[in-house]
Image (tube, rainbow over all chains, first blue to last red; front, side):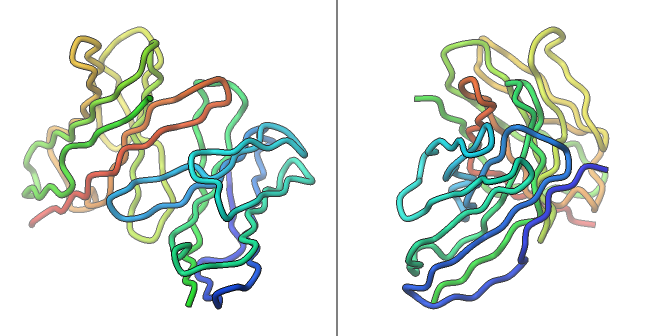
Length: 113
Length: 113
């Protein structure tokens, strides 16, 4: 059974803290993605990676960075958390092919106070 | 720019009734289209996808969708809704060469007994 796991389901952080969200997939997928989900806005792509150490900005990269040191792991980093980054964060992975399905993790609900 | 529109934010149906969720896309080339479902507190699960060929595609849980190029639509249907279908539904179009997805804002489905 394919699996994408995220390190935390719920996270509460203070403004200005550095926050790490971890995602691991066990399917040997080349692509990995980070989205944030907000009511009425659907899912918006923050960053994605198509290979180890390779990354591309998505539609809303400001305030975020990513790291992919190993194929199975993709980390999202909030360098200095702000209240407007309170959101649900979803990680996904897929094969490289354009028609491939993306598999999603359960999400991390981050609250920044 | 590519975009996906889901005109209905909330839909309520009675159990046993038929269902149609609307999706319109804007994309210059032949689109790769997806429908995902998100149950409360869960990640997204793929219901079905369209790449080419037969414009009526079958998915899991009794769902189907029809691709209509002339209307730029990919509406999701189910002939008889079950209470367990209550969830949020997202339409998405594949963009570019790295299997990026653009999501609609989602439609939240409520099912009355």
